[in-house]
Length: 105
View (cartoon, rainbow, N blue to C red):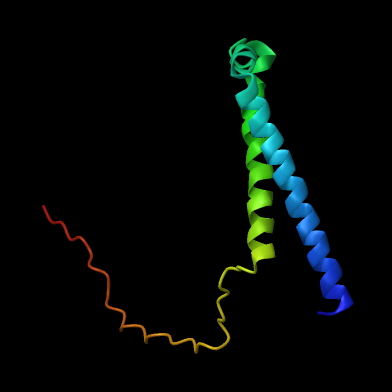
């Protein structure tokens, strides 16, 4: 493993630990005092933004953690190689004249 790869891996592991700690802290905060969280979320007015902001923050932190964790484990999504497959297009059928409505009185 080269020095550059080692630095990238160490940085990736560091980000994984950071986002994992943030995610764990957020979940712990919500489960430690659920009554306080429910009280603030139910107040209304400007407090109505709290549940929405909370969902975005937890979703971002958890998503970043899980993405970095999969990368640390060496599991990556399969990439499509479109250049290897020839593009085959079917010939277009002959165009027929459009039917016209004919009315007579």
